[in-house]
Length: 198
Image (tube, rainbow, N blue to C red; front, side, top):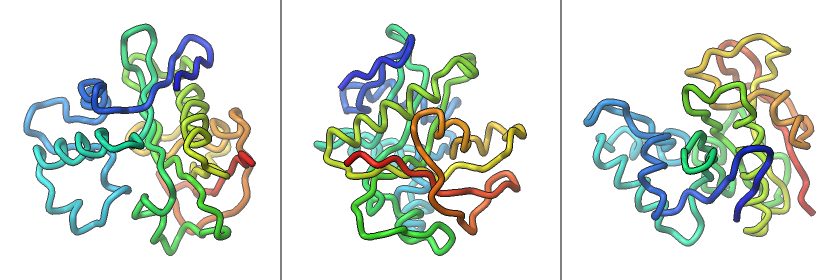
């Protein structure tokens, strides 16, 4: 899969691209703790048990599975973004959330993280990532794709909490609000947005 919205190519985050996954998700200092986009994906107990190397190894194993754990955006050969996308049932914090409602029994896919590499923000990387994540989910049979962005009404979102995305970002790629949630990020309400692929 290669989506090319604008100047970017979006490709599955497969094992052969692990160095690029590490660039986007790993710590800046070797041995430091980084999320590796696992905090939402795995059980909280396992998340607390995994040290820096174990987190890296866990993501390497996810990338080696038949369905990649997300997508990467490239400008030429340079990785500039990451988005976590997977079946909702595999995203622990979403599937078991008491704050984010499950809307129906459809096997929805979830986009829970959208990250743009420093130095490349404000250039359309987020839109390219979301469009590529939707294409990736469609190719794997997803009937609908959901996300849980902040409804920030144009207010600035701190970059450390911006990984959930904004309502405007998702609406620019064809999503529509379908529900409110009891969740917040950066003190702003999060909503459920959805794109039907049927």
